[in-house]
Image (tube, rainbow, N blue to C red; front, side, top):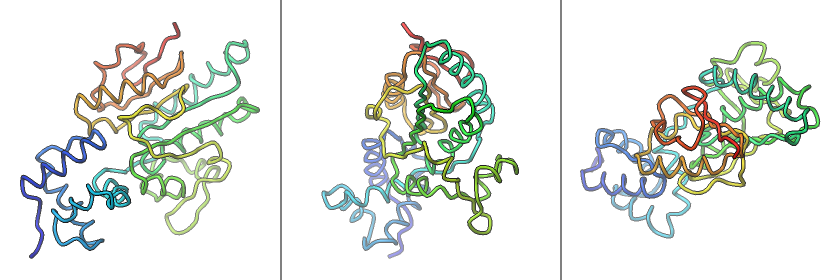
Length: 276
């Protein structure tokens, strides 16, 4: 029998499972979309129907399938220099203030940043490009950029560092030549020196952040998929992970502005954890 879409009971089971694992709430109007994405996993494996797949996914034997499942049902689209003003600040005033503070002996010669919900890695690599463009001022600094995502499949693409023209739309020709090398038609690979400070790890935003504190955290176009309770939990972890004086960069659609009271607001996208 042709599997068309989840019935209401099946949709509820899968959406509750996704929510419990990731904090992402799938609304009822996404029933067809969720059905289509799960159906691809059924065709890729040996499951006769949605119920058999759910039983496998929630069993001990289904641990390995979880990565493929979340890769199928979450959105991993990303691009370089998405919302350019955020990176104008990161590569400009932010780094300038850090360098000045270091020269005055107010902070160590180090910078730790985190791209939370990094998808296939373009945001983390954009940070790295900004650092390379300031390499002279940051010489002898200890630099690290962490990208995290719940999808291991997305992280594998991020570690590979190869991107198509769609992800590269906002990358100027000058930056393409300097920070990427062509690997095939319409495909570009991040150069080794750009990728050097970047690492990728699997991370659920409903859990405490890995190895804090961070001087700057980007969280953009991620929490729009969370309900209020999950957003509050994730925001707490993000705020806790910031170093005193650290900055949180948020996307315009995250819906978390009312939850950022512990931080000082500088603009619609920029919040600071003021040192006590």
